[in-house]
Length: 204
Image 1: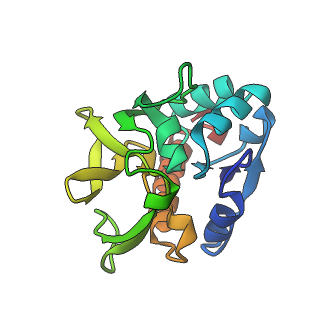
Image 2: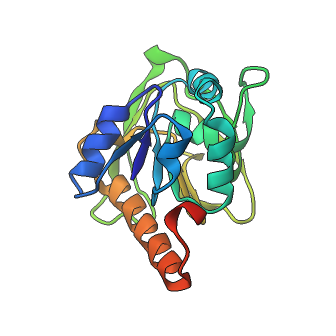
């Protein structure tokens, strides 16, 4: 499993995946994508990550990999990068796509407005998940193929579309590995389908 390692909560996501027995690869160059079964886009600063994707020549290879079916999980900034469109974003902010959603950047406010909440996540057993929101987005609009997994009040904060999972919050910061476990299950399902077709991981 890869973790995009340009900026943000790279170590925290890597630890959460390693705790589930997953081999983790830190992704910094296009060749790192070749053998991945799945990829995590960490929380951080979406415009900074977008700029670094261009600097490291990862933007187009990542877009292509996601469009070809590489399972991806994005938290906070990762959700923004996966969106089809972003409100209150920077002009020309690069996006990776993969989710038919419109996301509002910094929707819950600035750093001082950070908060935690207990929320129910569809597909996650064991009771509510403790969710940490830091300069978090929310989803304003979803397409027909997008499944809403969680809300805070009436605001959508967790979604899934096929092999793409996104949360507005930071599950990597709480020590609760259930969101990562959900994503690992998605990746294993996709890997099983590829094996049945005889398709290599990098040609998903």
